[in-house]
Image 1 (cartoon, one colour):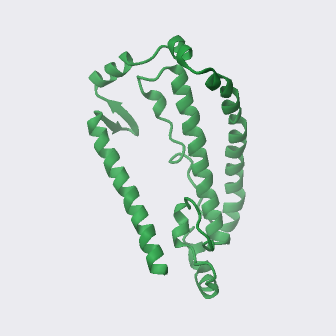
Image 2 (tube, rainbow, N blue to C red; image 1 turned 60 degrees about the horizontal axis):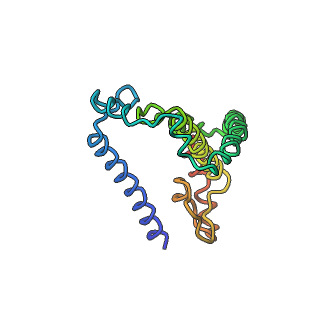
Image 3 (cartoon, rainbow, N blue to C red; image 1 turned 90 degrees about the horizontal axis):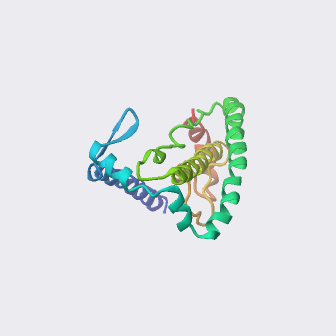
Length: 192
């Protein structure tokens, strides 16, 4: 049973690698390259993008009223997100230092690059910044929580977990008391 579960997790990781390979193919299709960590479009494509930008007034006129009314609630979430961001930093500095766990670097999770696309207007760019921050922050938080779980309770659940974090594949089977006692320190050591 354990081997079958491990095989399935390996297939998930292989699929993620295939997705990255396909994304690399799209870079050539849409004529951009990564230089110094930033996407750079060919000059001709960048000019086409600017021509395709929708003006702000036209964009607002085409926006359904329900979207405009929801905007304060969406952007109001920035405050709890920023509190979470600061809390995660403090949590890592205190707890991860105490437990000897390597801290999670924030930068690979909070990637803000879509606002540089020439075909987006200022409102769309702001929306992209918001989504990049919110989703990146939650992925960052998930990795921090995953490392904490690996340190304190690296046991799989008895029932299926929807979308488990990447560390979950290496956790000990539910009910495997001997495995838990035998592998706990090994799993903790992998966090240093």
